[in-house]
Length: 449
Image (cartoon, rainbow, N blue to C red; front, side, top):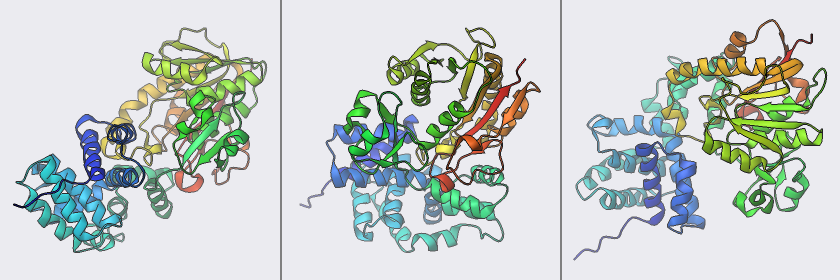
């Protein structure tokens, strides 16, 4: 009797995470930690499963093109569970230090455990075909040449949908070399960045606990290893996990001068609370008070947790304000967006989003900015922020919403020490230039009376 061993636990949990992402529209960064904890997977196995999930999701488009060349039917005719196994196996063969025999053998075990014996022969045969070439050779075989179709070439080589590559290229002024660098940066897992919330913690406290200074923001510290929750300031809410780009846009809004009093600040789209907590600390230090507004009650509760007692939190729709017009000195409107600026953190999002999603969000973004412009008093400031470099979510929104009563300030002086900020007046941060998410900020000052 032949004893058939089950697939190892790391591959099994990676499969379950990939399945949840595909079937439930789950986010890997939310579902995977829970699976690892539930099954008590730690250390090397946890690291292996994490790379397997994130790496497979990032390269999904490229892997599907390769698998399409190795399978005798359209991929959408395969059992989705079998396709999940093939994608995981392809990542092991082409991007991880896993021997071909082990990658194929473990994939066969995995499909037998998760699906049944029937597809084991197909998985074995297809992955042996994949193993016959390395990644570069496969890309040369399935991608169009750069000379004939540069966007298609970059899309396949760096596994981003074509429309996203086009949007990035356009936002970078048509520079294909810069576009390539951005796509490469998007495929690298970002460092964990912490924020020391003013008045509640400081960077020095985080450094003493083992973090290192951030690159740009005076509130930022980078965690090279370990779980953020292991840090007492994070557990206590005095510090948090927040990309340095998100910190920079909040700092820029707080640094630019207003004409007149500076005591009432508004965050119109505050959930889940990262920028609100930073702004609240900055406001408190100046004797100001932040009102944090969030439309969704469950996200408003996250905001309350983040700001503690340093701000007032209300559940309201920013497009139907419950406050008087022209009543705030500073307003942040960080609008709902496509999230194209944070694809390195949520790699599955690149395969979910479409250009139609960007178009659909535009009216809401315009409405929110117009509401923010009504909320600010003469001489006050509005910061329009979004985590996207797409022109239709950034400059086009400001151009449509802002009238003659608003002056567009040059943001660059309020980001001291940050280089490669372009010609202004707005600022677009980039993963490949700044090591941050691709955050956009425009500062608008309402003309004094």
